[in-house]
Image 1 (cartoon, rainbow, N blue to C red):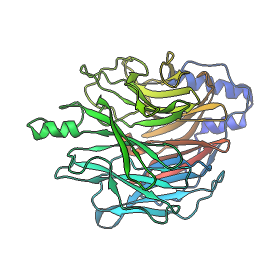
Image 2: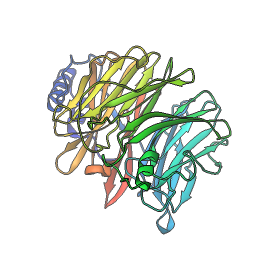
Image 3: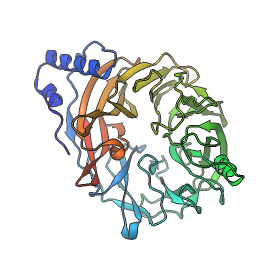
Image 4: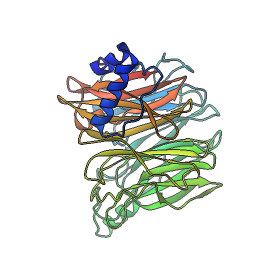
Length: 430
C-alpha cells in the first residue's frame, strides 16, 4: 500500500488545534461547508493487506450477518478469460481465509464500473454474480447468478436473471437480503432498447434510443426466481445502483432519466410485497445527454435513510447527501460533501456505531488521485475527514472504492496501477 499522504500523517502527530486547522483547510479546498472541529481524536489509517494477486481488479466488499468481510475480485485466467475469486475474514478480524474460486470463463463481459458482487445471507448461503456474453454483439450480455450452501467451496450452476433469449445488456446489480434465505436483486435492463434496435431503432448507451429500465427480482433458497418486477421504465444507462434495508423494507437508489435528459437520483422501496413509484431524492435538474457512470450510494438505520450522489447541476462537480426520516418518502435539503473540479465522485456509504461514513475519489497532482473518508453525524454534520491514500491511478483505472463498517472501524478497498497492471489496496480507519 502507498504511504498515507503527509498531511494525514501530520494529523496523527500534531495536537488537536493543528488537526482542526487541517480539517477546516481541507473542507475549504473541497468546497464542503466547514463544521466545528471535533473534540475526539482524529481517525488513524492503517494498511490492510489483501489476498488478491497483482492483476486483480473490479473489487467488491460485502459484510456478512455474522460480521465477516467478503472480498471478491476478477483476475485474468488462461486464454484471455477471467476468474471470479472470493476471500473472507473471520468476524471482527483482518486476517483472510484462503481465497476460493467462484467461477471461471472465457465469455465474460468485463467493465471497470459494472462489477461482480457477492452477498451473504443469514442462513449461511453465499451468492455471487458476474456478467456473461449472451448474444451476437458486444452489448448483448446478461447476469449470471450463483449460490453456495457450503461456504463457497462449491457453487450452483449459473442461471440467467433476465429471460432467456432477451437481447441487450443487463447489469449494474445491487443485492440485498429478503429475509433469512432469499436474495433480492435489482439491475439495469435494456430489453426495450434492444427491441427497438431489432425494429430498426438504435441500441447502445449514452442517451441514444429508448432508455434503460430498472428491474428487480427475488430468488429463493434453491436459487430459483420467485418474483420479478419492472420498477422504472427510464433510467440512466450505466450508473451503479445501490440498496439498503429500512424498517419499512428495502430501498433501491439509482440515477433516473427523463425526456429532457435530466439525470437525477431516484428511489423506490419494496414494502409488504409492493414497490413504490419512483421519486427524486432531490430535484437537482442536472441535464446531461449521456451517462456519467457515477451512481448514488445509500445507507439506512430504522426509518432513517441517507443517500449520497454526484451531480454537476451547478456547472461544477459536486457530491451531495440528503437524509430521510420516513424510510425514503421525503428527503431534507442536501448538504455538500465536496465541490470543485477535483471531485471525481464514485461515492460509497456505510453506517455504524451511530455515525455515517462516506468515501470518494478526487483528482490529485501529479497524475494521481486521492481517496477521502469523512465521518458525519446522523444529522449530516461532519465530525472528521481524513485522506486514506494517494491512489496511483488516472481516470477510470481506479475503479470504484468499496467501504464497509465493522467492529468499530471503516474498511476500504480500492484499485491502483503498478507497471501497467491493476493491483488492489486496502486500509482500516479507526
